[in-house]
Length: 363
Ligand SMILES: Cc1ncc(COP(=O)(O)O)c(C=O)c1O
Image 1 (cartoon, rainbow, N blue to C red):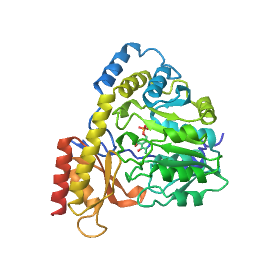
Image 2: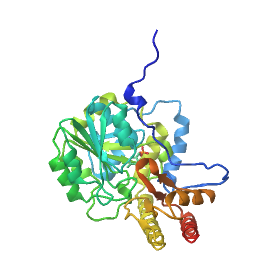
Image 3: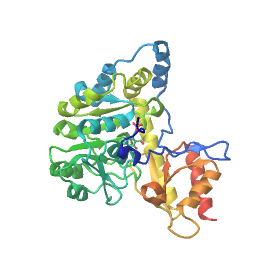
Image 4: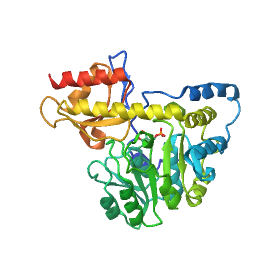
């Protein structure tokens, strides 16, 4: 009888670190560390979730048919090209499970969603980090990194944690340069927050190209993060293998029902978008006025860059804000030790966090 032997590549990966929700010695915290919605969920989604309680002894629809139909109707898509997941995390993971083998390569931006290298390593693949350009993905850098082992390119557009985005023309240039054997996973988790005219949420790209999978989430603008529900859109060539490995009841019933109500409540979604854009712009302007660099954002958060020396560094700012109950995301693990990521909060939270930053800068 030998010792238990986990896969060596699993032991070498650093697990995902979630945004802080607690701080030692601080009783009441304001969590602006996980890009959750300050507006919350549509009351219709909450109602649908509560109504699901009487059916909780039943398995959910394994194919999430009604949810896929609702998404298809709202977005003008084909329901049979939609796949639902326990958060878009599951979609991002499933596509890799279906297409990536040990020793393959997965490309992502150096500053990008933390799950991409974790997914690669969980499968024994090599994550290849390409430096960003102007905080967004670098199309030429990505194309130069492609080898015959590249199976997936993950592109978070807009990018988390920088908030920057690539215009549609650049994404098209990326697709044109990628081998058809390589999947472009177009992660549009923050698509509903974007107001740039030259952006695409990726539906057109996934319709036009068999090797493009778009992924979306109900966790951000729709405010359903705790329910874990997301979706992907792509060709049968992508979805068929993904559906073969998908767990049968991966999208739970309250999540399916809440998401149906949320996606159909266009008034609420539009209100949430307006709120997010307005306060993101307000935060960016006010924080820039304090002499800090704020990366132009198309998301529900802003990345703030602090001086690299002296009394006003990011780590000290993080400690100061934490002391006052405001939890942001400090990103040393992602090579951004001079940055804090701030999620758009409620009006009052936004006002207080700016006042705290101002007091910090004047110390
Ligand atoms: C870029 C990006 N993609 C995907 C996700 C995963 O979201 P979820 O699994 O909640 O749908 C996140 C969450 O922070 C994200 O920032």
